[in-house]
Length: 460
Image (cartoon, rainbow, N blue to C red; front, top):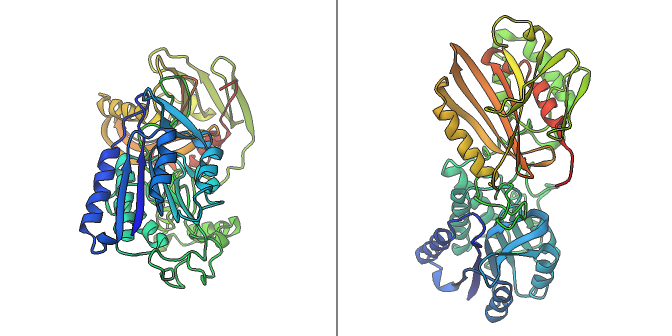
């Protein structure tokens, strides 16, 4: 009988997660399985350090599943005797599981930013699944449902992983690239047969040089602060990544053909054959270029630094743009940038890049801040026809961040707006690229350059 040990922890000073629902769905999957008698499901909730060790010793599980909060490189959040968070370091967790390497076949870390722990545990365990960045509860639960449906049907860990990701997609949740897998190629199916087929990129005979053709941003919980002041423990699994359309300009073509010279060939073809109906927006959609990551078209402009010593940031802007300081106590906007020609316009500019810095009165997770931010956008009186196009986890100023792209009609003009936010030391840093829809793509590369140049200085 294959034993599956499910461990969960939701300390009282962290955001509430739907862990009981996740466990229930796994039980339902087992009850429906034809092979249900081949498995034993063991659960431990509100897990403390001693509970973790004892559960492993008492049960000798083949699959260990952890659900809860992660803190990135620091480790996972278990509970102490008072119910608050106690961080288990990556090294100590890896060393503990090393003692069970002859028993445990697979470890699933359904927790925020658990890729670091997955990498460390993979040194001793054949198959480890983690979450690279934030994830909604819905996505985490649906991944578990798809994963265990496959496991209980006798499929390989590789197949189960893919079916878990696919179940996120099937439920129209934009986070299928959040889970990541570490799997040795000679590792067998749970029922002693080989991996699915040589066509499977994880099959030992596959010629693929990487387990997946290129996964883009694969990202559970956004940047948060524990009530005790610890920064980085992740709260709600509140992040939406648009399937294979991650934030931050990325190219969904095999890495071996992802080269700038290819793009330089494509663009002239695009321009040279307008009669064929190829326009830049259509090309971007057809090639599934997703907004936000590595810049596709790097603007050929000279940049100047703008430094704000009050709010502790520096950003690069084009030398043919101008800036206007604001320090608006209502909107918290501190500076805006725009082309010099727009600054001289009589009416409001067609495009601008705005930086907002807002001091928080108390700790809040990035996901909760974004939820409040979106709700506020929907309530803004002079915003009509608000339409959220994309949202998802990204990085900003080398920190976990969240981004939105949406369209609105305001003052008789149609706008497309991109906003990226992060939190550091109870301070929200938000950069906004706002342009009329007709101008959005034209200046998009410059906006991305400014976003990627943004740096926050000072101590954490």
